Image (cartoon, rainbow, N blue to C red; front, side, top):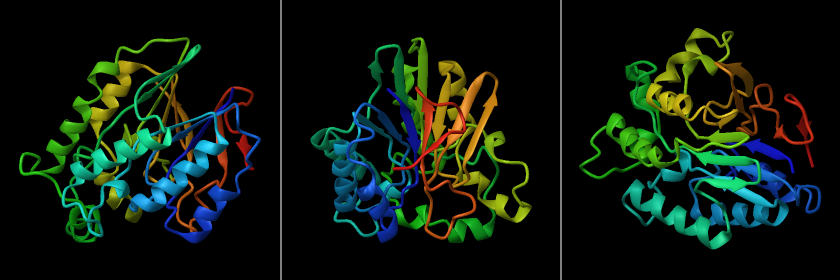
Length: 262
């Protein structure tokens, strides 16, 4: 059994969706795919991707990203309502959204949002960041910090998971120092909406061997405090330089850094 990491498929783009559909139907039948969010904001495309991937892999494990919770173009008016619809879709299509144990490997999804603990957003980011317009939250979740606390509370019951190998995964970034030091300063203005320190504290409490995350579109594999942090974002079609555009094997008959394409 191998475990592959993938995030930020953005299957709204025809070429990205075609890449998914073209993955081998036979090569990964004994393998597990961890899909760390931002597949699409369309429930119809999400269902299509789920069905395709479920037919190709032994198991597919998923946490939604921010794009999945956009409601701007949906019949639903609340991002939490859409979160519930996504959970129903996962159940219908055989996609795992809860903790899962496969022999000596345990998989732990960690839900979260961002809370500006990585920095305060400037005026440009507040105007430009689409989540602020495309998501809609109930009155008892008035800001990003409250939204993040809501999702983090869902993780409390799994933070004591133990096994020979533990692989956790989130869409959002658990610590800002996973970002590469050579990223230009002007690109760092998005840091406030990348993740949260509190998510990082939960990862620290869990102490997985590997933590898979998405969202940043900057591929990474780095060890910090005895945890291997991996981001394998497929990213937008034009983002060729910062994305592998391949599956990335993180466990099993592979070594860190191996890339596997269909």
